[in-house]
Amino acid sequence: MAKSRVQFICQNCGSVHQRWAGKCDACGEWNTLVEEGTAGGIGSGPANTRNARKGRAVVLTSLSGDIEDAPRIVSGIGELDRATGGGFVRGSALLVGGDPGIGKSTLLTQAAAALASKGHRIVYVSGEEAVAQIRLRAQRLGVADTPVELAAETNVEDILATIADGKRPDLVILDSIQTLWTDMADSAPGTVTQVRAAAQAMIRYAKSTGAAIVLVGHVTKEGQIAGPRVVEHMVDAVLYFEGEGGHHYRILRTVKNRFGPTDEIGVFEMSDKGLREVANPSELFLGERHAKSPGAAVFAGMEGTRPVLVEIQALVAPSSLGTPRRAVVGWDGARLSMVLAVLEAHCGVRFGTHDVYLNVAGGYRISEPAADLAVAAALVSSLTGLALPADCVYFGEISLSGAVRPVAHAQQRLREAEKLGFGSAVLPLGSEELVGGNGAGGIGASAFQPTELADLVARIAGSRRSRADEEE
Image (cartoon, rainbow, N blue to C red; front, side, top):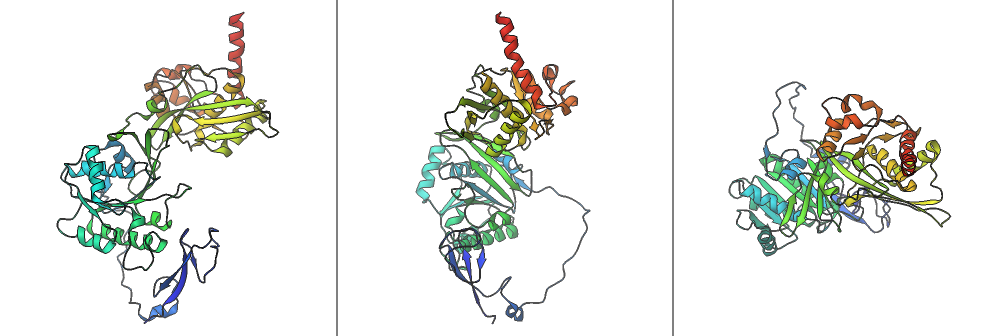
């Protein structure tokens, strides 16, 4: 027998320690190390080689060969299928994370009902709610008559024995992975050891049988899925369900997908009847726009393969503080500081005595640098008190030298803007072939393409002089 060895696992970050300590050296949390015994595996020492079996040779192949598309189960919910890359892949494991009460269980209940109504065998296992609670939600959503098989269980071995009885399920939903526990580990449910072991057992079942597995994961206060990061590496796809408490829309964002594109989003609207698909999210984010307000610019962004138009709002107000405030909602604060520095250094626009507030309308979050040009336009508009043209969209990246750099997918951004009635655009100079001809319709005739950020600032300031001349 191999001699068992004791190691200590951090329940916050999953790092392994050889001896107990009050503080984890990896993440800095206190009282998170829990003892765990090992009798094998990587790092257990040479004693484990006594019972190790002799390896068998595997067949090596080449990169060339026949390629088959992954077999998928299409739910019929368009936004969900878009986020997953075309549907659930058979034999894959998918992890869905999100804040408490954001609508994860509601979305998965609707997906389970839609698939079950098409003749698929769907098993919904809840470790947090009783069967009666799930039935109440199904009645509220109007899907109580669909043949979804329910269970309230947390033991992995019992779950595997249950779903192995009868026809192989097409989709198994486990809500949530933090509540599961297995007899193979001695830790309490929710600990790193149990989460890792339970996820490994369910993923092994999915790969061996061809059933698709959906795991629901809690998130920490930082917004990351709770538990060890190794779970995100083990699964085939990771989706985050996002949304602000004061807004009725929800975004299903793909951050990892082995069978499809990443950075894809699906947009839903929460109602008393469940989640409703939003086919055109640009109309949702621009629905309450006030066209004549200074400090507002419409940004034409991209989320995966989908163009999204969203309003960026800026407020520049005189400050009585020695250090003016810089507040950002929905964008990167460091990126805002960079744009302010470029405006001051290369354009002569001074913000040193002003508070700056930046907000992305609708609670939407922007991560791409293509929003630099729209942010700069909104800041200058608010400082000068001049409203930007209501039918103009902005996109482009700003370098530290003040140059406006091209961004990808310019044609898709312009087509989305034209579809929503916008007639002009401000975009980088490197997009001549995309704004002329038939690619962008009427937008190409009135597009402004600055090479430097100072050109855009001069254009906005010039509108003040033209208005003054008209008044005279």
